[in-house]
Length: 148
Image (spheres, rainbow, N blue to C red):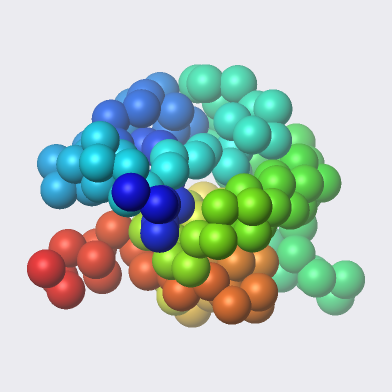
């Protein structure tokens, strides 16, 4: 089967989230097993370690900034990862993405506000935004579950 989707790796049992956990979803794992989807973790692609310090997006006058609560900046790594994930989609003619909700990489529609307070705002993660702007249909795992 030709892959149609990319799926956040953390949604299919890979313990690659910032705290070295996963958000495994059984019906998504079957999509990987059948070859319908390819798993990706943009933050691992970016070269970040697992576990790693949590990061959030902040809006600035110059665009976005990806920083940790401790003040370390990861903007360039996230932008590079977005380019790589888009390249994977193009090379495999992938038209759809199922991504981890609220993530600074993969969130779509709602992300954390950049203050590490747990407050959600309208917005997209770096990778989700890049894919969406390049014609990939993006949904979060929460939206995908509710469609099934």
